[in-house]
Length: 183
Image: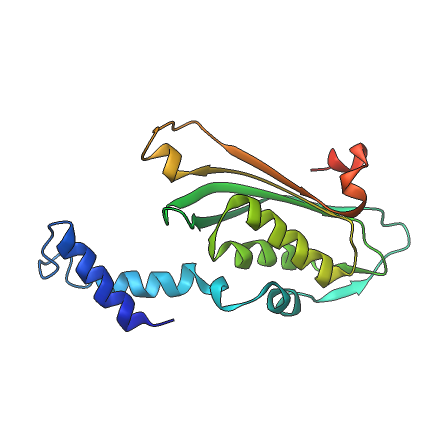
């Protein structure tokens, strides 16, 4: 990531909106924004395959394990259309393990890293599902995301209570209603 270019562009944006980037409260803003972008867009530098490898620590599946569900994983992202915050997002991930299971914290890490890109909520669900399928070696994955989008709540229509729900259903989750109900 080119933090020096980000700093220059943020300074230009401040000037373009009529601010003085040299005033006390804004002097270090370009540098702060550049550091923030390094953190919140960390996932841009990694493919889904890279993320599956980073967080793909698995364990042998217990005999009785039928499904694994992790709910209410909190993430945020930025929509690629307005670079506006997608916030208060909760991700539910379920999968049917075959021969191995993924460490539970790795599921949350996968969701977090996939969200650290310019995203669409629909693509985020697909990315998480794709990463999960590769990391754990099963086609049977379901992902549900519920979130708010500041491009709807803080601008445009300004409907502060609007939430968006998306579901990505793969393998057995596409047709089995009882599996869908796990999400």
